[in-house]
Amino acid sequence: MTRILFIKSSPRGGASVSSQLGQELVQQLQEQYPGAAVKVRDLAQQPLPHITPDYTSGVFKPQEERSELEQRLVGLGDQLIEELEWADHVVVSSGMINFSIPSTLKAWLDHVVRVGRTVQYTADGPVGQLSGRQLYLVLASGSAYGPDRQDWEFQRSYLEKILSFIGLEEAHVFRAEGTLAPAEIAEKNIASAREQIAEIGVVSLAS
Image (cartoon, rainbow, N blue to C red; front, side, top):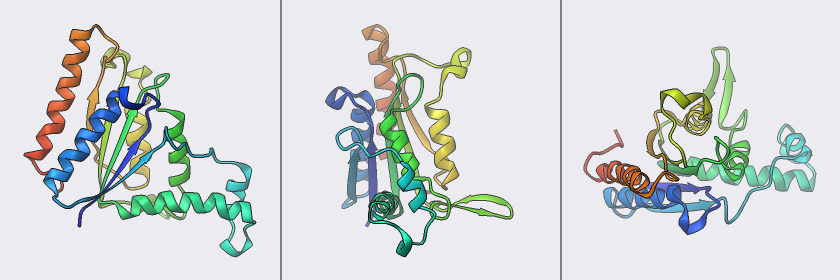
């Protein structure tokens, strides 16, 4: 059975372009893989705690030496990592806030990017442990970030880099820029992203 993990992060609820497009992508994957199981983690509805001194102390201790609080905090990270390990397809949707990702998504990353679990350091450098899974990034931003504004863009560039660090490489990116532009331009940009998403129902991205 194909397994799909959908990570939502926008604080805009039903008005979120990235969440809407992400849901459409999940539906396309379900059509492509009938009977697929789907797990949804909505980070805006159920925000994760930021990592704390108790987390950082506990994560480097053997389990039997952790305090009750350390056990609980590290255990939450274990659960989030297990969701990634469970999935064949990982869909991450994100709006842009202050040129980067929502803090809720950063908190999720801080829990799942863990040395000794999702990345191992070797003599040849770091090796991500989550390879073999398909990653999809569904991104939206109020402005556009072409060649003349790339130095302001820390959304796609950061997500691609940090997720590749744990082995989720070669992301398929669906991007709706300029969503705060005049309506005609915004609708055209969203429609373009929607068309790209629809194409995955025709062309397999699983290879």
